[in-house]
Length: 254
Image (cartoon, rainbow, N blue to C red; front, side, top):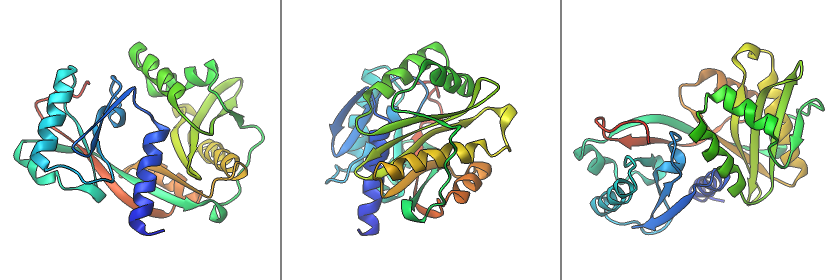
């Protein structure tokens, strides 16, 4: 598989792992909309097809999002950066630099903790832990619950407990043999105890036994602790980066 093929395979898998409530294809870009503050399912994303001229793409995306009462937001990966100049001219500023990491399952350390719970569906205690650690409001809770119900394919929701309280969570989705690691969170009172590594490691172990051949995830570029955690699990191959583009006078709340 070429590097370009791998990049686009990862791009699609990450979209499938966090589905949007509605999606519309315009000028070779996928316009995703879910509501709430999370940018990925509320932004325009490039597809691996012939894409339209930058100004036509931007005009169409602005009309779509403004028509739905949302701020136009573009997710611009390095592998499809043709909008950059046109977005600059229109006053869009970059935010949220993120890296895609990739690893072959066979080369990853085997980390399996029998005390980490693994379930194909998220229980109410898993949801409550995720919401508590991410400070979700009521609207965002509804959106997140709906999103998990839209996931297609093999999936697992993992959690670690301390004294009967879930203090670390993650979930994963296998698409085309590729595990996508999502929503890794550890309670701030229980960090630096190896919980994140055991939780994600157990998720990778589940994927290995389910037949996945590789794994990927997205991490904020300057999140040093998270990058160290993922490196310890074998996520040492950096693929490509992306950032978002938004006009500075537009509200951050979608």
